Every structure is written in structure tokens, then in C-alpha cells.
Image (tube, rainbow, N blue to C red; front, side):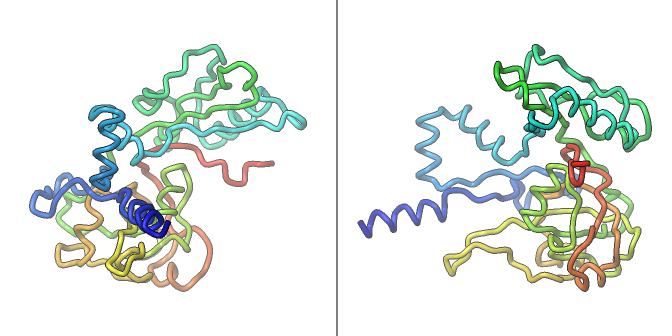
Amino acid sequence: MQKGRDFIKAIRRSFFTLHSNTSISQMDQSTRYRYSPTLKWNPMVEEYFIKVYGADHFSRISTALTRPSCYSCIRVNTLKSTSDAIIEKLLEIFKERGMHNVAVLESSTTWEPDNCCKATLKCTGSAESLKTIKSISKCQFPGLDYVVFVKGSGPHAIHYGDNEGKPLKEVIVSRKCAEAVLRGAQVYVPGVLACSAHVERGDAVAVSVAVEQYGPDGGWGVAMTRGTVLQGSQEDPYYFERDGFYIGQATAMMSRAGMFRVTEGVAVDMKERVYRLPSFYNRDR
């Protein structure tokens, strides 16, 4: 029994880890600022899954596990409202945000989950309005018409301004914070781990994520303390670790000092996202 528990524990520890798919020697500055993580599996687990699924299918599974879902699923409380009423409410919200011509698909429309992130509906309005919604639809499966899908888009290429001859100002967030950002959330103060020096309110910052790694002590964690100063050069000890882990560009809502002094509030406002999905925070009114 003890040997079995030890084996399962070892497999769970090394089941898979996220890492950038670019080595230090191969890193090209022009492709540094992107979102392209890969999964590094435990060799035994990888070999087993390749036998079960086949190399191509397993490769697609591994890629999918590094990407967020590109649609949001809303369960409608039919005791208080209807799916049609919720869709109308969502259209009002998106219109308030400057998003127009959002497509409302009939529940009979063919659902293509593999293609849901490959295109975005062209909307009219401000540049900000072109970022989020592809379509809204009821679930097509019988008996599930109380489920509403809101589809987003991605991945999108982001121009961080890294060709302007000066180091970018950056913010590193925790993995849990980044997962929320990839689903449409803002970056709140508790999620910020590190920041460049001399960041002030209103500055443009590149946002990247710190992923936990398995350590020699048997635990998982990030190799930095909260409040770390990012140098923005290759001398920065965390410079290569965040290559390929950039999730968007944002505007600082407070200074660097403020981010690590207060305990709540929006630290940076996401302006450009790798994956664009709507946020439904505080939309219960």
C-alpha cells in the first residue's frame, strides 16, 4: 500500500508542468512577447497517452490544455427569467460598452467548438468594441435551452511596443490571476507578484504570468517574492522565465508603490488581450 501511495504521489508531482517552448539559446527578441506555453509531461504519462490517443490527437489535447475556453456558459435561472430575456440584457450591456452588431444565433445553428476562436464578428463602434464578442446563442442540445453561450475570440497577436529601443515596463501576475484575465477579468492587486521600477499610474505595461514549478524541496511555487523589481533586461533573473507567457497589454491604475501598499482594487486595466472574452462581473442587476 505504501509503495502504491508513493508511486501515485510521484506521478501527481510530475504529471505535467507548463513551460515556454523557446530555449534561452533560441530566443528571438521579435517573438519573445507572445503567449505560447507548452506542457511538459512526465515521460511515463506521455508515453501512455500517446499509445492510447495517438501522437497527433495527444498533441492537440496538450495544446488545448494550455488555452482557455473561448466561450462563456451562462445558466439561466428559469424561475426568475428566460434565456431570451438574458440575451436581451446581454445585448444591452454590450451596447453600453460600445459593441454593436453582435450576432444572436438561433439554437439550431451548427455548433463548431474547434472553430470558435478562429474569427471575430466585425463590429462597428470604437476600437475597444472590436475586441470581444463573436456571437450569443442558446445551447442547441434538447432540454438545455436554459444555457446561453457567449463566444469570444483568440489567440490575438499583441503589439507591446518592444521595437521602440527601450525596455518595456512589465507586470507579472500569479497563475490564478492570469487564468481569470484570460477569461475576461481585470488584474487586481492581490494577483500582482512583480513589477518594473518607476511604473506610475497611466503607464502602459506588458502583463505576463509566473507559473509554479516543482522545486527540490518537493513543493510547488514561483521563484520570486511578491514585490520583486523587474529589470527588463537579460540580466533580470526572471527575464527568460516569462518568455512566451505574455497575456496582454494594460494601463497601470496605480503606481508600483501603490500596487504593493494597498490590499484591494484594480492594479492594471487590461486594454489588449490575447484571448478576448466578456467579463460578467457585477452584472447581476
